[in-house]
Length: 638
Image (tube, rainbow, N blue to C red):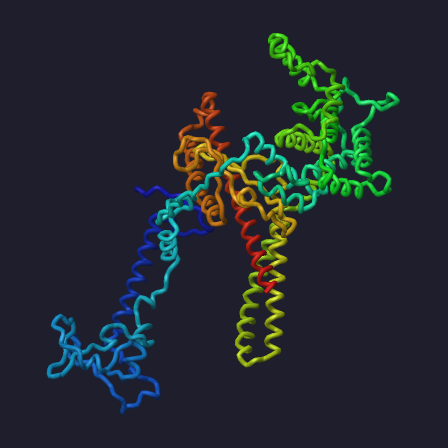
């Protein structure tokens, strides 16, 4: 007795006959299809449309039988009976846009698909015969609407709409995004000096509050290529940083063992002792020592004196250089000091050796053999320091490096960036609630605006109060958004380039120094330093020259983000993914060092591009919040 092999099926506990699951599934599908076909035949055959009677075409009481009506002249080809429908002039014009005069005066059409009654002066097919009738009888009496969609139909429709898999190709090709137009930047200074300015600028953005730099002084740095030398900024920076060194308890400068500074008694001095002695001498020169003011008041008064008519002299710059060399931060200062760095001593020896080899060129340089004390004394006796703008920027940048040794400044930067993720989530929720509240307020405002037509004083007062509340809520939300974005920007552990693309362009995003106040530099004719993107490289047109470019405007920056996201980032991800697909598990162990390095570079480039897209998203959001805040402030002023 032959029997079919039993098929193992994991089912509920039963003692019935076990069938093949594939066969059972196919039979169930066939039964479902047959059932749907029978339902369709039942609907279309048992209730034919011809067996039903169309309701009256005019159901309103306004359409009287005495009004002008037009009758249909079509003959039904199945029953060979004329159509009995007629429409009044009013309903025909209102529902279908046809007039009685046009129907009666229209010429006979030889290509008409309908068969009309003979002996009529006109031919016209009613909306029912043309299947454009909008009554409930014609709209609902469709067999397709009575068929209930099954889960299989919904699944097939979803597959056709969204694809079979999440990573399948979309049915519509994505829109190609072109890069924005780049604007050339005319460099007014050397690149080395420009990078010094950018370094000082970003230091003030992150630690300006800790150094007590006023927003007015910080706003002068908004333009990187501005005339910084004629401002009081250098005096404010030098005095405030030295004040933190003198009176801060956290600074532990790395004094060199062979160059320990000692006081008049021969005892070693700390960094704070040296700076306090220098600060005391500066106060005495400006006539502020005998006033008996507090230390912070003395610092602000000294900034006003040196930033005003007194100015920084050669002795002031030499004092700062002396502190920097003792702290190990003044390796390349162009100012003579008593305690030279070994690098400076080596450069002096090289210069002396070159002078000995060329004695004819050394006749006019008799002062080069002076001792360091004589050089310092000669430098301090000058009424004006013989320093260029680049030299002064070098000293200020070294002072910034000195202040970074203070652990308190690192702690302050960490405290400001705490709970950023939680604040960002809470702000998104608050924005959604505010948008919902504004929608309700707009409806209320429209209602009050309608009441104003009756010259209601109460409505005017309510409308004014509602506008003020909406403006205040929007302004508070945008202010919180800006504060959150500023903390996100400051939370970057190390400031550097935002990213680079495959074309060799490097992207820099400089921050806004005027975020704490509405004051802005009136003479700033280059706002792209704070509100744009700096691109250093060949650009987007295939140029081989190394240039500085800028992307200006919110729309262009958003276009740059979308272009990087849809073009550059996708290319990097595809290249990285293809490299992983080609390598099997057995080949991974035999990968060469060159292939590993190439894969690492590709992954690093992809990470850099992703970071750039994220930073651009934050920057676009920041600029839009600034615009919304300015518009709200302007509307409130009116």
